[in-house]
Amino acid sequence: MTWPAVHVSRPIEHDVAAVSRVAGDPAQLPSWAAGLSSGVRHEAGRWLADSPMGVVEVAFTGPVELGVLDHDVTLPDGTVVHNPLRVLANDRGSEVVFTLFRRPGASDADFAADVEAVGRDLDRLAALLDALAP
Image (cartoon, rainbow, N blue to C red; front, side):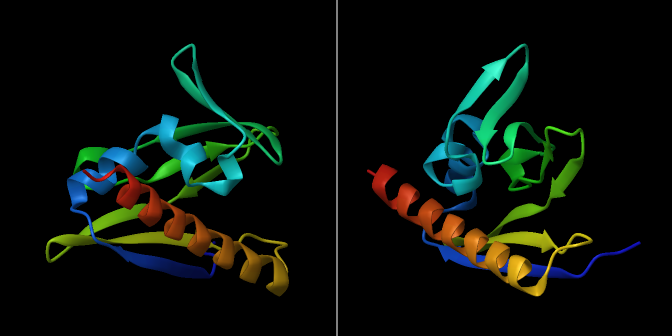
């Protein structure tokens, strides 16, 4: 089965390496990814995050250094959600693209809210990179 998808993207005025270094660091997720903003910790070789759904595991599948920031989020019930996230070269900056799949049971309103939330996360990522730049 395939799900409908929306690609949410933002230009970021930093190169692929800089964006990947920050966005691909699980410890930085609370700084820009609202769904994982309650805290991220590294335990027994796994990255765990407090989310509105409870404790989730986040695993980047990479290669992060090449701008492939796809990550799997394992929910408290064991469901694994694959989240494609790419950082593409765009002149001297980057285009960050998150693919959001509409999962079964998601209402139009819920899916629209998820799309907006991803956009806000990417805006926060851009602001974080600006703040970290020398």
